[in-house]
Image (cartoon, rainbow, N blue to C red; front, top):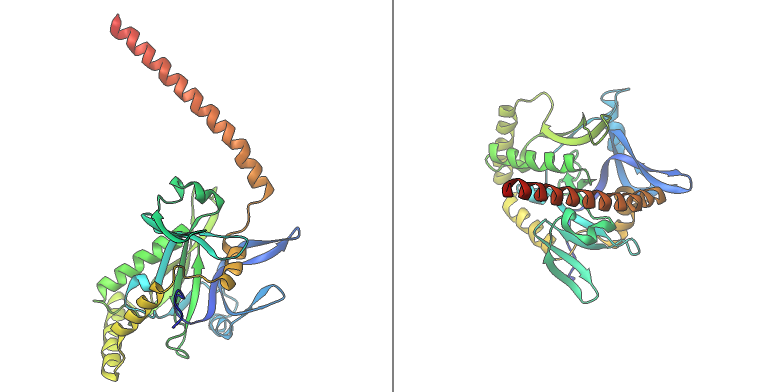
Length: 306
């Protein structure tokens, strides 16, 4: 086997809640309020829809696709969802630095180095476009039991919610996460940061129409049936874990270009101008705060002396 090549779950399609559009001669990401299931083929700058997209929409004609029935490949939550702080090299499309908030792997002229990762808030390199980046692999349908559809996101709400749900379902099912009948759901919320406009994120729930108890019973029955048939979930998880560990980075250069397009768009001129004009203001504010603090200390000193 080739050394340094990460073995990732076989992907047969993509799940997205947005698309890339042409605007003023530039390709820009645009958010959506429903799921779209696509193949891995692009035509005329857009992803070709997967047949399952039409199949699921036909079940609720005229309604937006806001839930998708899914199963997971692995029993280990961290194998199904991988999330990290990620910075891509815009010239090559390759990952440049990937970290978890404690340590990172960084591509340098001297090779891959393991360095401390202070998270984007405390890293100078992060100004070049480092973001939280999550990848969730799920099964849709029964056609390919080891093939998966990947949902990629840089949304903190989606990453945090999915990570919590996976841990919880693993716990309540007694380790039967891979056989739980689940459903991806699109949810909306408004925040101060979004100026009270609706933003959408992805959640994971038990299959629609089932209670938690029913889903757990079904998961354990399915796990027992798989074991009786000789399906070894533990070895599958071990093989996946070893495959991920083989490479320094999960994302390859050919995927990187599309990922940059959709999730890491280049900074606009207006954005750069805003940052450069904000910087002096922050410095001026800091100077005024220091001046007030010094004046306050001088006042306290005078009062104590008096």
